[in-house]
Image (cartoon, rainbow over all chains, first blue to last red; front, side, top):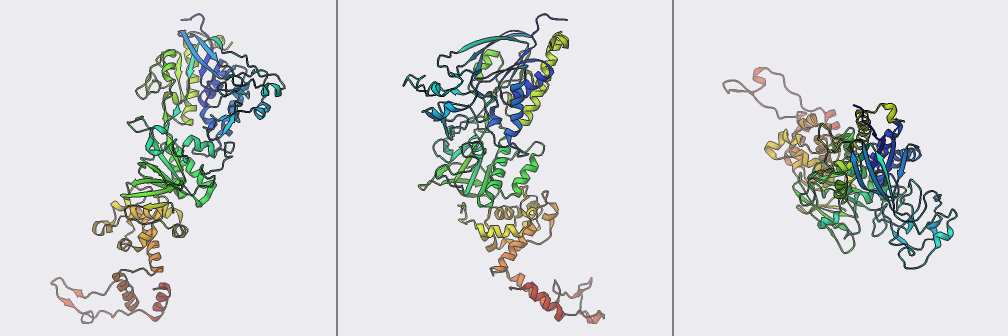
Length: 445
Length: 169
């Protein structure tokens, strides 16, 4: 039966690799795509990574062409720095309400020259670099920001916070893009289907107080370490002891932080083992045999294609795998860290003197899932992630018709599975909309 | 050093580790992922509690002094079952032999039985001491009463080569 007023637009919520891939697939078939992203730039987590396992290719090298493609595609409407606040209607005809946060910089006018960054007097912690370095109150979200439009942080900006009538950026901007009067903007549009790929957060390890994250400077999360390894990151790819700035002599990786732990989250984060192996191999390749590398694990789960070989490569590079998770990380008065591990195979208590401790924090649900769950009427599972219609038979569908779930918001997973799901969901959207009665010509007008 | 053992108070020797590391072909040591198949089938484990997987782990972590000084490395029966069965083509046997060589090099105390065996080979040219011929009814015969040929001792040439090979001892 043919149904009237089926919309051919698709809302893709989340501009990470999942959203980018799904948007590209849908736009290439001929659908109109609204790509809504919360942060000022698309790219998501993958843009923060140095390299990907098991090929060790630079992450941004793979992501950048896709980001540019999606930004230049005429059928994709990029709506960055925005959040969905309303979603109503019925199968095949949904109305979406999006709130655009003010950038205080006009997107059409800004050329991305970066002159405003040079003159801005306020320095703030850099969110993209996980606080490892500082940026200005007016800044680009990341070195690879797309769209390359500056954003003013109203909390820190002297003028917007009402501290001083500073207008340094206004003076220097040649294209007159700065607009302090910009207000929150509400836009609505109609779509036939939705793909939700809002991603997930990594565990805040300061909750596991015994490991000293947040208290000890040289205990860092794997995402911070990833920024440190990135050549375009805060240290230009140099691996340093954050207290002294010297090259570390000994690095310890601690797996399963916050995950497989009933105090926090019970699930397995899926990628932690491989992330630690990837980072350990990268350290060995950059620093050679002068550095001792220890990976403290519960189990090594190298389940994917090429993963076991990757693990074998790590072993052949003399990376020490210790069966046992440290109970605590202690700091000695001279600033070095002591990690005690009870090694299950040797039945001995080992103590490692470490310069840097990298915690492999698990992938965990984000705080705003509850809000999104209400807006879209999709239930959350007991683990806190969005619940798919069936774990085996309908892994991409949500219980709401026409709404699909992909990427880490549906459960922890790696890049390869996320991309596979994205393409799968794009195909599902096409099937769904044509099943409602529209011929392909009408859908792709 | 960055690693120490609080249970046995032994320390890691990185210089020695690098030396052993260079000596061992990569795959002989590094492939090991502690499946402990070697220990499960070890001939010496049943009697003498040699655990080849622990030897592998300790060598990898660099506790080499401790192993070289211990008597456990001398209990290996060289049956090579561990090498045969290792799923990662690692070889605890080769690691143990390298550790023994290191012990000899450093003139650590070598167990007496070993020295006896070496001197026996030097004297007779035989691996095992000669036994007398025993019949089914437990009657013992000398070789010459049965007209069996005499076994020659080690030749001078063999002794020279053997002593040269032994080197340090």
